[in-house]
Each structure stands twice: as C-alpha cells, then as structure tokens.
Image (cartoon, rainbow, N blue to C red):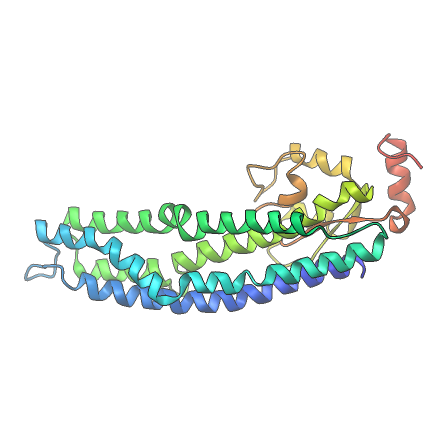
Length: 292
C-alpha cells in the first residue's frame, strides 16, 4: 500500500462513517426538540403569548435538565457514538497493512493499541457524553432559557429559537450535530495520526508525506503541503507558524498529531527514504537534517 492510498482510504473510511453518524444525530436532535417542546408547553404565558416570570415557570425550566438527559438516553445517543467508534479497528488494520509493507520489523503491539484506544474512549466519554456536552451544548441552551424567562419573552419566539438551536435550519446545523460530529471526526483523524507517529521512531523513519484529499474549503496551510515530502525536522518548524484553523495546542511534537488543525482530514504519513524525491533528500542533506 502506498502512503497516498493509506491517506485516501483512512479519509474515506472516517468520512463515510461520519455520514452515518450524522444521520443518527439528526434523528436524535429531532427527538430531543420534540421532548423539550412537550416539556416547555407547561410554561404559563399571558394573554399576549409572553412567558410569565413566575416561580412555577422557573421550576419547569430547572426541570428541563432532566428532560434533556432522559431524551438523549432514550434516543440512543451513546449507542450511536459506540457504533461510530467501531471504525477504529478498521483504522488500525489499514495502518498495520501499510507499515507491514514498508518494514519487516513492524509488529503491531496489542498493549500499545489497547492503550491508544483506551485514551480515545476516555476522551469521548469526557467531551461527547459528559463535561464537553455540558459546556458546549447544555450551558448555551440554559442561557437561551434564562434569557426568555428573565425577560418575559414571547413563547412563540422562544420555541423558534429553541428549534433553531436544537435542530438547526437551512443555514446552521443543530448544536448537538455540529459539536459531536466535528469533535469525533477530529478525534478519529488524530487517533490515526497518533498510531502512525507512535511506530515511526521504532522503524527509524525520518521522512513524511503530507497527504489526503483536498476540498474547496481546505485551508491554505494544507493546500501548500499536500502531496509533498518533508523531513521530520522541517515539520517540527511548522509549529512556530500561524495559520487559520491552527489548533492552539500545536507544538513541535503535537504537530504530527494535530496536522493542519481543526477539521483537518490530512495525514502526515511516515515513509521510507527510498521513495522520497532526490530534491527533498538533497535539501535536507544541505540544511543538516539528514545524512545519506
């Protein structure tokens, strides 16, 4: 398997799985809105349709937290994530096939893979099922609720605002979909790049190919590098640059994992020096990065 084929197959695999996951999230969002709508119809409004500022209305709003979590549980939100993460084993298989083809010394370590998967699952539990969900989805929803209750807003306007937030419209995606889909996609690409980087030192590989599909919205950083070979010391220097979409956690070591940053579907794939173009070899011999 060529490095270009590896990058393409991993990208196609993650994107295809993401489409299925997104479809499940849309269904979950619709159920969530309908459940919340039933709950908020208990709110007392005046003759003009404005929400009254009463203790009972505040109790109803405070109780919505339980409705939210009950709806997610019944909708299969966690199950959808678990089904999506099945793709990890396929990512492992693709990477193993590639590295087995370029080095006779490569041997996938079960403990290493298990640890890497454990870290991924832990992050998913934090950012998709608990703390991250609370901070990025529930708290902003609470702010919408508080704004309408505290100001005695229009009930119809409140429901329209709620619907846009939860399910989205023609211009924006629902909050749950936009948050979970992007985070999980980034996590899977980062997982694959972590796998690749972890075995590089053991195999003595120094050069990389920046590869992956380019889309219309690809950032300039990726457009300039896609399809090109680099020595690992050159890649480390990228961490000192600034570009749109750069992950704020990017360092000389994490650049190999975070690549172009948020929503980046490219791979920085370790390659054997034998396939690296002569001009790239000579460039790095001259700048002292590589010895032939």
